Image 1 (tube, helix red, strand yellow):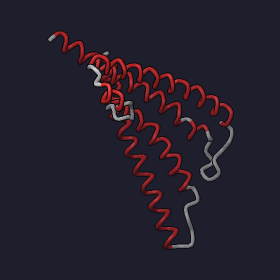
Image 2 (cartoon, helix red, strand yellow; image 1 turned 180 degrees about the vertical axis):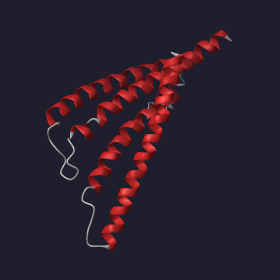
Image 3 (tube, one colour; image 1 turned 120 degrees about the horizontal axis):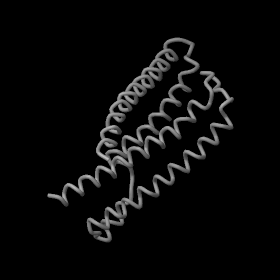
Length: 165
């Protein structure tokens, strides 16, 4: 489990850098579009499409990073109202993780079906196969599952260390 966590954390560093680069490209493209549109009569016809596809990847990949640091939305009202014990709280979070992983697997399955149907379709401005933007969904879900498992494995390792101490 420890080597899995280290591997996922190494992947996270790379993904974080890629996401930052994507955000910078998106910002510069949108900024250039606004400047060109306001200073000339022309425009960059592919800028909106590129920004849209980049934000899709940023959101789906960012969800994985958020999962690793337990920053995704989860049920917090029930534990505070029911005054759950530490053990019951972790059981509830484990059930929540299983449900989330099940949802991600179902999303991957559906996204792969959509990609298999629409891969020959091309985007209007960039002339990319629509498989490229649609691939953000299964890639992001696999990455999300990897990080959810790493987060849970890390909790289990900390629990074992606490029990041994």
